Image (tube, rainbow, N blue to C red; front, side, top):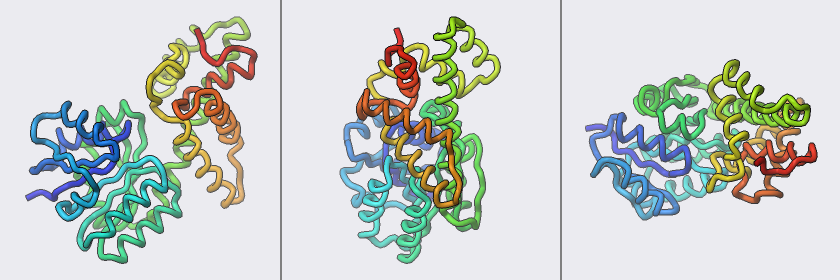
Length: 306
């Protein structure tokens, strides 16, 4: 019999990951799912084949049933709260796989709290946007004992992910260090696109031609973010794809890593300042692509494009 799996967290990324896990994963029992807002679990279940998931009212109700527990949660304190609830149970022999993006120091501390009680832990942050999660095209970063990596591997490449970065027997925190540094590339990409499009508009070139060049030169994330900016998606969507508070959390962690290492990430400092302006303008519903709006305002344009 395949291991029983519990999934905690159904945000933008988690929903797509669960969909692929249910459809392609090595499951022979319904996937146990828990989300703090239960309606998200209900909505997701309605989109999946019957009897593929079992909705839980609490984390505690699922831990005794599960052999492997996946988490993908928004913030460090939310992850730690979930782990604290898990640790009220006997976890001997259970594997915790944390796909959240948190500070490496917090990951290390969480890992110690689990392994000291006889459980296993794997740091497994993932790279990719929600659309990539839906398509099973994420990149997983797996750090921890090789035995734990091998135990979790059947759920990643070919199921939830298109590729893995294998950090077997490396310290848990290395996976999160890579994840945070990798995310700075996304921030810098969005910042450069925003600055480029504003210059194209202000100089008289027009954004249409720059966007065509981006599509030809940098298809994929660059083109997708360029489209989100020019179509106004960054200020019209009901819910953000990458919420400003989460983006600033990741940026803050990366800036702290740089400071602790004795270096600076000046590009990220600029992007974070614009994210601060996004939060001031749009509140918690602001999106990372709103950096475009912040750059527009600095240049004397309206935050919202027409």
